[in-house]
Image 1 (cartoon, rainbow, N blue to C red):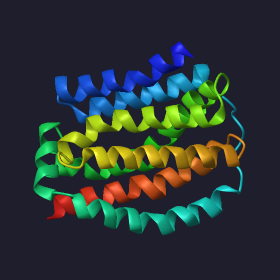
Image 2 (cartoon, helix red, strand yellow):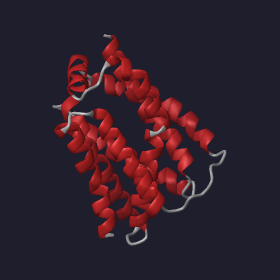
Image 3 (spheres, rainbow, N blue to C red):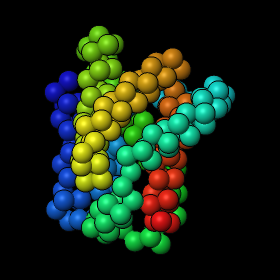
Image 4 (cartoon, rainbow, N blue to C red):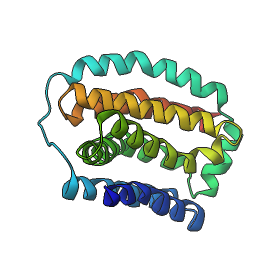
Length: 205
């Protein structure tokens, strides 16, 4: 379990160094996602195949996404977001590339890592409730690195929201017997699409 906890803290080091040391958002994503996939390949849990069960969750995510977008927009400061992203080496022309990466790579990487590796590993040694809570708390906590610059007054609320989202993904992961596809679909449509909408609006303003 100590190895899993150390692995779960690795995003703090990688993303923190890339964002605040090198000021490179692309390096942060690359290091994080490579680590997610490598950890799942070596330590990941059940690798059950995809199933048609993903489609009901796609519908649920599609219904959830507009609500999530509206909530985020209530706290979004577009000039601040543009300034922070520029400080991390982001240019507006990269938005389509970032969008494609977030839709195709990011949700699968995070679900493989946080549910398929960290939660799955902790659940072998801890009761389900403890494994779900701990993995979701770690999942949410590292996102504070990204939330603090763009939500300086409300980062803690955003972090709690990510923790809650992690708990929901654990519940979905368990409900579908370790299938990652439903979690990935919901993560993509329900969380990453709203984020991309906010970024697009920020740079269109």
